[in-house]
Structures are given as C-alpha cells and as structure tokens.
Image (cartoon, rainbow, N blue to C red; front, top):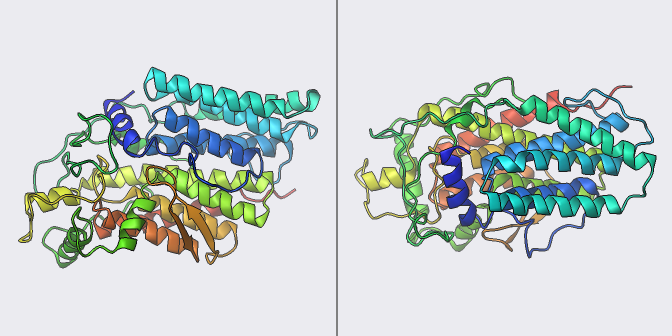
Length: 440
C-alpha cells in the first residue's frame, strides 16, 4: 500500500469517523432492493477496511458498474458498461447483484488498510452475502444469477487490475510562494484524531499517482483540465484569500452558525453523501432495480472520475492551501497563528475534489430525474452525523457542498467554483455517453 495512502487511512479515516459506517446510528431511507443494500454495505465495509475517500470512489464505481452489468446481462434494459455476455432470462437478478457486489469487494478490500481493518471489512461483506443469499430460494435461477454476477465481477476486476491506482507515488512538495507543502490541523484537531502523533497534521501529499489512473467515463484524466488558480497578488486571489481568512478560521466571528453547520454537514466523504442523496430521491420516485443500478453506477463512476481529473489538475498546479498561505503571510494580512475550522486533507488546493464530486453527481442526478429542480432532504453521516438539511435542487446542494470548503477554511473560492465546473463537465459527458437505454 503506498505510503501516502497508509497515512491518509490512518489520519483522515479516524478524523472522518471511518467515513460512513453506513450512517451508523442515523435514520435513513428504507431499503428498496439489493442495489441499495450493497451500496450501504459497500461503504460500511471499505471504510472499515481503511480506504480513504479517493480509493472509496474507485471501489464503489467498480461495485456499481458490476451490479449494473450483471442485471443487464439478464434483461438488457440499458447498454452494458463492459460485460457483453448474456445470461438466461430465468436467472435471479437479486442473486446476480449480490454476487457481483460481493466479488468486487472481496477482491479490492485486501489491497488497502491494515490487516485487522481488512479482516473486519471482509467479515462485514461475508455476513451480508450470506444473509442476502439466504433470503432467495435455492434452485437453478439462484445458481444462474450467482454465476453471472461472478462472471461480470471477474471481467471488471480484470479490466481494472493495471489501472494505475497502485503505481508508486512520485512527488516532491514545493517551497516557493504559492506551492503546496504539508500543513497543520487546528489544535485540537477537528474532527478529533485518535492518535496523538497524527493529530497535528503536516502529512505528505496523498496519492499523487491518482492523476494517471485510468478513468471510468472520461477518455483521459486531463480531458477537462482546468486553467489553474488565480495568480498570487491578483485581485481575484486577494479576494479569495480574504474570504477564506475571514470565514474559514477556527475563531472566526464573521462565520454564521448556519455556515458552521454547512461546513460540518458536508465534511463527510463525497461518495457516501451523494450516493445517499441518489438513494433518497430514487426511493421517492419508485425506481426499480435496473434504474437504481444505472443511477448508482453513473453517480459513483463520475465521482471516481472527479477524483482522477482533480488529481491531474491539482498536482499539475500544486497550489498551496489557505492555512499555508495565511500563515506564511504572503499578503499584508497574513497571520502566523491562524487556524482552520476543520482539518485540511493533505492535498494541493486547486481544484476542490469535494466540489468536483458534487458538480459531477448533481449533473447526473438532474438528468436522471429529468430536472435539476428536485426537492429533497438528507441527513449527514460521520464525522458530524445527524444534521438534516433540505434542498430545492441538486445544483443548490452542489453549491452548498462547495461553499462548505470555504467555511471550513480548507479551500480558496476559485478551487471550489472551478471544481463544480469540472464536475459538471464530467457528469454531462458520462450521462450522454454511458449506460444508455438499450434499443432492442
């Protein structure tokens, strides 16, 4: 496991409350079918297994693309992503979903985290697999469903085995003004970090090799490469600098109570939060297995591509985080004692991949449901679980998601706004070109 990945799993994982635990202790929408079950189980298992949000995005994209193709091998309602084979129409679709999701998870879990984390994660998957299959009647349809799920998972795993995710990282932080270098957390760390040695932050850059991971829906990682952050000392940079300094500081008197709530609400990992939104709205609309499978495959695939495209851009420009800029004092209003409201992930600033993920997911959701103007409420998961907020549109949620990073003190405004733009481009392209309705 790459060094930066180990550190992030150790440092950010605990800081995010292991990121999901299926929204542990939180009320959530009733399970609609096996697609939702394995979305929740998958997040629970891989977060417990020590995967960080970037790796989680890849894993869940693979899970849901396999699930989608397994269903469509039985009844081709949508074009397959990868698997062109056909199963007997009598095969049990539930068994196909269960087997496809399980096989992808058990193949990927051992590649990340510590052995004890992996063991706990695999136990979660095994329990869910056994319980889910026990609900289905034995017989040929069940066996055929398992067989097609396994075949699809094997094909997808084979296609991704050399995708660059485990390539050795090659990156050296900068020292000049504007260049990223390791940065501190607030004291005490917020959210808390259990290991006192890790709590201060100042960790190496996370997964710089992700800039060359094979995308799921884009042609290449740099397909929608952004123009770059504002140059130092420009009017825009100074405006962004003053905004995050004023609103994102630990002791800010300008940040409102609602803005603080927004920063905390959206601090959960992007794949988890946007999948939950997809489940909520799909359940309200009464989607069936095939529709749910397509929706969650697209949402998770574009989020995964958002992290890939984001890594390409952020490690190209290598722009420093607000806490470094403000503490170094590159502007007249510098403050060596300034602290962020929340912990800053160990990555360059531009773009905010949190914002990229929101832009990508919101674009897919708006197109799937035929309108951006869909009202919904969602309750946050760890590390600040139990906060419920309501939205009138997917784009409103994506904007608030981006705003949260300024309120938390972890990103400049340009990184957030350009991040939304990058995500929307990814989402629009993916929806137009992948998993289209099958024309019989």
